[in-house]
Amino acid sequence: MHSLEGLRLALDSILSHKLRSFFTLLGIIVSVAFLVAVVAIIQGMNAYVRENLAGAIVGRNAFQVRRDPIQVGLIDDETLKELRRRPIIAPEDVPFVERAVPDAVAIALQSGWPPPQADVVWRNRTVGDALVFGITAPYIVVQDYAIAAGEPITDVDVRERRPVVVLGYDVASKLFGELTAGIGRKIRIRGTEFTVKGVIAKKGTVLGQSWDGFVMLPFTTFEALYGRRRTTVIAVKMPEAHQVVDAMNRAQEAMRIAHRLRPGAPDDFTIDTAEGLIRFWENLTRVLFMVVPAVVVIGVVVGGIVIMNIMLMSVHERTREIGVRKSLGARKRDIRDQFLAESVTLALVGGAVGLAAGWTVAGLVDLVSPLPARVTWWSAVLALGLGAGVGVMFGVYPASRAARLDPVAALRYEV
Image 1 (cartoon, rainbow, N blue to C red):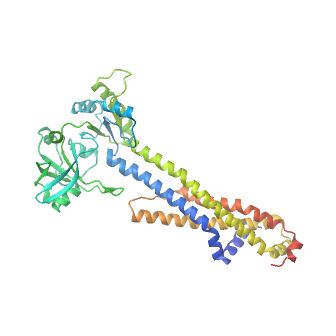
Image 2 (spheres, rainbow, N blue to C red):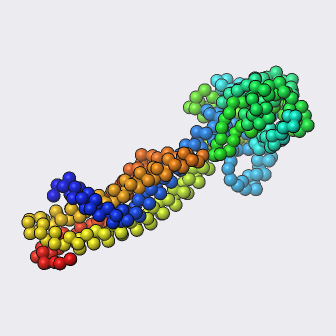
Image 3 (tube, helix red, strand yellow):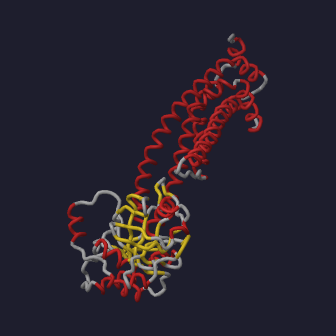
């Protein structure tokens, strides 16, 4: 039997029993849809963390010289004690890094994480728990911020410790409504009066969390208000991503010189990108990837068993048909191939429907939630391959049983 003829007969059999075929394939449809949707969400989240969250924290094509590493999760006591013994990253360290990385786009000093929070007050309006950052002028460039109104903080503001502030978009819009209306106004932070110099353009949200609820002070003004922080950070932005590693090595040598570390002595600082955060997230999703196959396998096995039972029922119902075909010259191989083709086609249809359903679910998640979803080509191929594999595995026995039927007994059989 030609393969196209076998496929046609298989499709005719499926279409003649639509409802039975649907319930037969339900297990495979649900399993494949679950696989495609979950993989799409996880892959989308991985890309989202790398492209948005990591960039929002560190900046694109950037790295940081820090006292503590960017680390998500628990830190053991010994490591914590060692980190606390480290010296702070001081403003005096910045010139060393500047000389070591002259090709940097910008090098900034900033107060580290976690930033303090404060109420921002203008007349009878208050924005509570705004994040307060102390920065030098290049910080705006490092973080890829754009000024929506007014001007950014300058080197003169830092040098003269001016009482000026740049507001995040959310803070400015809640206090003044129109962004330009706040420029030149006096606000109060911790009882101290500051002049609004500029407003940062809207950054938006990451995983539903706004990145616009902050205020920025000149670094020296921030230290006068809060004192010297133990988590000061030097942020360095490079022109291209491929230049970051070499610049990190040069900055490491410069910091060892600045801190007068002997050869062989461990670093008392950390030079970090957002890779620590990305690695944590990818380890978490790796655990999810280990759970997903177990759930899918259970559903697929159940669906395969149902397909095998339905194919055995089909062999039983079509026993006389098999006898007639054998009496007309059909070989065992022809009968086996026909029923195997029906089984594979049935499972492939289930895989295709499951792929479409999973794609739809992923699209809905992407549409109605902050969770992104990206359907990858390999998950689509896996879905269809899974369907075909189930058809072969669970279709061999019914097909072999049909091929072994005696034609004389089959012709005498009454359903």
